[in-house]
Image (cartoon, rainbow, N blue to C red):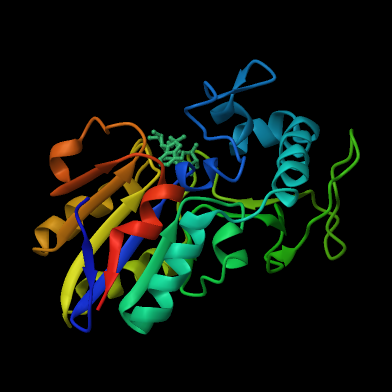
Amino acid sequence: MKSLILDSSTRLLVLTGAGVSAESGVPTFRGMGGLWENRPVEEVASPQGFTEDPVRVWRFYSQRREGAAGVHPNPGHTALAEWERHLGDRFLLATQNVDGLHQRAGSQRVVEMHGNLFKTRCSNCERPPMDDTTVYPEGTVPRCGACGGSLRPHIVWFGENLDEADLGRIGEFLTRGDGKLVFLAAGTSGAVWPAAGLVDQVRKLGGETWLVNFDPPENAERFRHFVQGRSGELLPRLATLA
Ligand code: APR
């Protein structure tokens, strides 16, 4: 198998998607047909879906909280945390996942591009997001203690913009200029932007690009190296820490 050399000149950005949590038992989006209660996930995980039926949206996220709380990081998560310990501030992990498994595996330099399943914020006022593992009972829409507005999951829904500070942190890391830029995407279909465009930014900067994925992506030619298989098996063996 090819080896990813992580040495004192490497600056590594990793992008993960649902496939990295699949071996922990967390279902992927496109793998499960993208339906929930026979509705497209896009309809539930969207501002329109929340306005239309907040009870249904909270049922969806409460079920995902219940499911995610019972799973554990897999060797793929653990390998990424080890790479971070080896590279220090020359490592950054941008994840599309909201399950918190990277942090539970020890990753600290993490940008949660799509939010976090275990955070809740007010849909009406500017109160900062709060940690919240509550699995709300059926029919409940929690209310904000400050303004009485409906609370919502702190998740970036379809049609919403990502946090500018998150995008800025990733952009600053990419253009920092020190060392040799390397990008590795793992467990992502590359279906959702702007995460899917990171590989193009890296190529424009002359960086090296890797994809570790179960299925070949439509856009395989955008990656210099493609290692096919399960991230939980491949990531622990892929890197040479020099
Ligand atoms: N190891 C590696 N790759 C895997 C594994 C595995 N064990 N299992 C599945 N995969 C791959 C699949 O081949 C697929 O290409 O992971 C990818 C998962 O793709 P998606 O389900 O589309 O997940 P993701 O790319 O994270 O979706 C992006 O879409 O629904 C929105 O906001 C949501 O963050 C999500 C975004």
